[in-house]
Image (cartoon, rainbow, N blue to C red; front, side, top):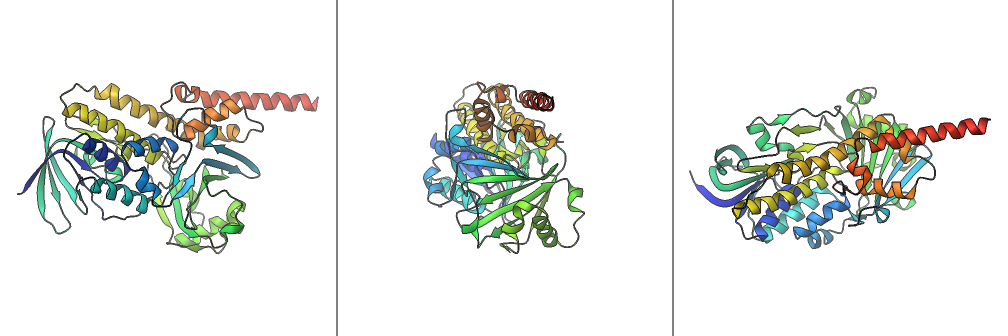
Amino acid sequence: MKTEQVDVLVIGAGPAGTVAASIIHQAGYKVKIVEKMKFPRFVIGESLLPRSMEALEEAGFIDAIKAQGFQEKSGAKFVKGDALCDFTFEQQFTPGWTWTWQVTRADFDKALADTVESMGVPVSYETTVTGIRFDGSDSVTTIEDSNGNKSEIAARFIVDGSGYGRVIPRLFNLEGASNLQPRRALFAHTFDERRSMVTDQPNRITAVVHKPGVWIWIIPFATGVTSLGFVGEPEFFDQYPGTDEDKYRALLEAEPYTRERFRDVKLVFEPKTLQSWSATTSKFYGDGFVLTGNVTEFLDPIFSSGVTLACVSAQTAAKLVIKKLKGEAVDWEKEYMEPTMQGVNTFRSYVMAWYEGTLDTIFFKKDPDPLIKGQICSVLAGYVWDMSNPFVKNHDTALKRLARTIELTEKLKSSSEIE
């Protein structure tokens, strides 16, 4: 069987894989990417966060992304009935990027993969990993192409950025159960011919609270297409009869915020369903490999954390792989696992607070404190590693404490007005 020798094998040509491959390649190492799918291919996760821009910049991808003409994004808006909470990234607490993009992922991912390939990193599409043998940190990976041809890749290290494919966790039984409740998304791309009549700013994602535990994402693209999805517990969707399109249009009609804007809107594709996406892994690294992006853990689409965690974890992992290849000592637990979990756990606290209703109390408070709003805005911008931000450092307690304070203040105010 033919065997190819590389320094680093990267599994997956999505954002995590390409960011890692580019940074390692720029350090002078021989890198190869294998990707199970043929690009371009559809995937959700279309609203980026400013923190991801730092990783994309280091990987050398910014110019290629700009050339795609994607819709720039400068904030996020939350709506509940007549209440509105609008975050602008320029007001964030943490210094850094104050804008990013809303992207069609098929085009975005292909732009990254094409760019890294133009740098000299070969990408083998429609290629499946069927087995991996480790000998210390060295490995031999068996792959199979779309024609059934098998070959091997010998590598000094493997970066697994396979996303939902979760190659190494599945091969080596590293998968774990998420502590987040299973949810379902019913979504589609719509073509909005009346976009000129829309009052929503196209440069921000809008999240609409439909009812407790059910919300809607609205992501406008530069093309006039809008990504729109409903997220809730699986049984919520069972009350709507008919096909997925029947359910989807009934949901659009049931929500006042979407009723007029999206009534009879054209669908770019039939509505799709994604369910029980939350997943975790017991170990993010091992002798000869590191896991990045959704392979480590995927939470929920509400705060668009997926691509940011993918890019930043890949950025961090790539630098540690370079250290390892240079013969330097790497403490994977402290240098990779702990910071990665810091980001994941911060976002997890916000996801749980969203579904518990804690963030309703905070987001829709009248006249919010500008400092607090800026600190929370930094989290929504993806700056979940800024330990000078109390809503990052104390992510597991700060939100609940703030919500209780708001509720108590409102209660005292109401009592005073009655008297």
